Length: 312
Image 1: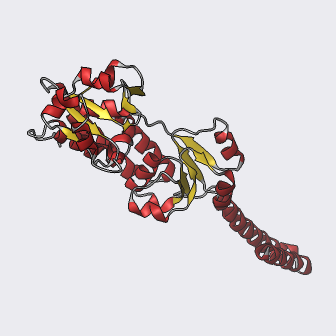
Image 2 (image 1 turned 60 degrees about the horizontal axis):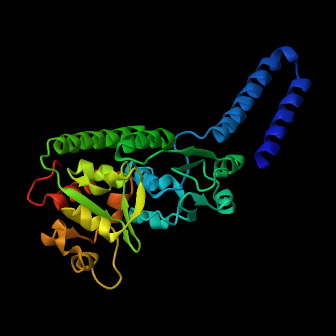
């Protein structure tokens, strides 16, 4: 308001000068000054409508939050979900809702330039976010193979193209190396990933965890079922007799691996006989498609083949 009033006063002064003196002498001067003033105002307006450089961001997925920090855009993050817990610096970012389910009221108050998600709980949420005048982008990331493309897209959206391309290239090269090693792996060990034990759940063919096991040189016993994740029985696991068992949860009273080793009827399973039952994992490395994917594959390979050196 102050700027607008000041500009009007300047403009009126120019008009008075032009009226009081000869048009031939002062008209060019008045016209030049008026055009200069107008250009200055236009520049300010344009900058406000089209912010240059790096937008403020709200992330509605933990995997995207990790990527945003990994490409150096963490300081642009002004909102996250309650599930976004890595890296440690994210704890300072305000929570705007749950995974894929933001509070529109909080979002409106924060009013970022950009909201990114992988999957919204409400199909109409994207339109509601756009109605607030906020750019909304969905970035698919269900497989390790999707991570490089997701990083590159985030790089373009956040203004960190070079950093994102560099990280995406490193991950692509790492995945290619793991894939080659896995293809050359003879007699792949069978792996049972116990995602939960009450009821028993595991990952099926095409799931993120299944692809991760394949990259690590193992064979997921859940691949016989064409579902991402599904419920199973103890008898099913005993029948499959996996060579490696990985428990992806924390037991409240004792270690999950000890519970597996002492389960009635499980002593016939190869993994139990050979004591290749593991727990106490950082689940974010194995269940979250993020920039630490190569670290997760490395840990899985060491678990499946403890005597072998991993590709990375």
